[in-house]
Amino acid sequence: IWINIDDDESHYLKILCDEVFGRDNFVTTIVWQKFHSVKSNAEYNISKSHDNIIVYVRKPNLMTFNKLPMSEEALKVYKNPDNDPRGKWRTAPLTVSLLGGARGASYARTGISNGLYEIIAPNGKSHKPTTGRCWFSKKKVEELKKDNRIWWGKDGNAIPMEKIFLSEKGGTKTISTFWNHKDFGSNKKANEEMKILFPDNSGGELNFSTPKPEKLMSSIINIASNKNDIVLDFFAGSGTTASVAHKMNRKFITCEQMDYVENTTIERLKKVITGEQGGISKDVDWQGGGSFTYCELTQHNANIIDKIEQADTTEALKLIWHEIEKTDFISYKIRPETINENIHEFE
Image 1 (cartoon, rainbow, N blue to C red):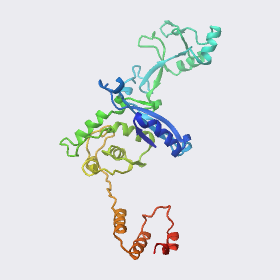
Image 2 (image 1 turned 135 degrees about the vertical axis):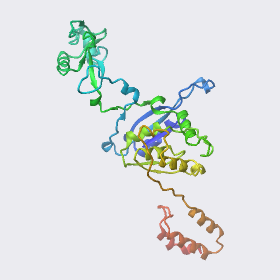
Image 3 (image 1 turned 135 degrees about the horizontal axis):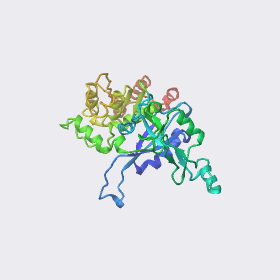
Image 4 (image 1 turned 30 degrees about the vertical axis):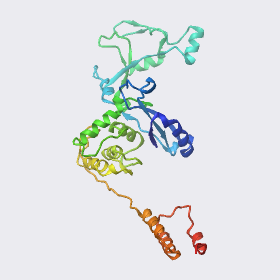
């Protein structure tokens, strides 16, 4: 359960959701950077730049979130200068901090640490850990050496660094609770995507105040679902969630009560099916295809209300009641048998 909300209401919504979904089912609140420019005329001279995304699960013991694919920027860090058969890798320090924790407390008390020793590089240069840090244990360093998991630089004399292999990371990353605009998109990016979809403004007046970029929605769908799962969006808006779900091979159900659904939401989904290449299309190699069904709720309840208002006899009202009995539009709170037992009181 993912709910996007601004600062004004997020704290009240959190309390309400705790009551409805259960406090134990709360996962986290994600901060999404929806604006990346500062407004010079901001109220109180504080420019609001983020929304909150409140996350809940129905059954915590059964739910496992997926990791996100690494961004192109993150993947660029992985290289293979020594042609290691395990593939591309990046470096990480062989040291840990001596400040804080049990290790830090022991060092502060005694001035002694098992990690304060010299490491000799293959070509003879001696290295000590930097101030405030210590090496991994000698046993750990020896294990890394034997498995060719230490990089000494091209000259064999550089400060030793651990090799972290991309193949072992699975090309994925753990999720942070801060989502920046570069990796997850912004309102500005969402508006640009809409203008590309409807360059002639054929999608109606595209003045959504809080549009969501496809990258944001694809991240949420990636984390919380798998292929062929059903994505439910109660507020279709411009149709971003449904469009992204379709491109990512998810089924979807979405609802909207505003009249722009004809010109915007439905038309956008039609463009998705024909293979439009905006948003995440290139990232997921979207080529089009699939279908969707569009249904409109009828005015059945309103028609019945009109009949009741126009009825001028008890018999007419009884006929309307018997008509209602045969439908599925009765509230679960109503017991038809009770009304039938006491219908004479209305005569």
